[in-house]
Image (cartoon, helix red, strand yellow):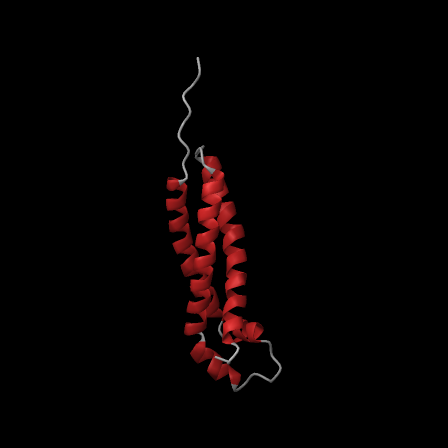
Length: 127
């Protein structure tokens, strides 16, 4: 990778965080609503946001590790002046999307645990 790969890691992590946070949040909103689960929303939101950030960074790191060889091979063909992120998408789309989807599956498992930890106690019916 380039000497500026730290900023590339953060950029890829930011992209995955936004994707994870939006699509994962919608996924769990549908799950919670369809199963009529009483949930402590603040606790779940906090746990899910932290998990999304950590796993987005893991996805970015995995992406850049698995994309090193395709990026080196592509760098010989790629013209100068290409942005690093666009170059990553052009040269190693399989590495980008495979690691993203892999870590999203992990996020779904962690999100399911967060739902279980964030369940609110059922209130007794008042008579």
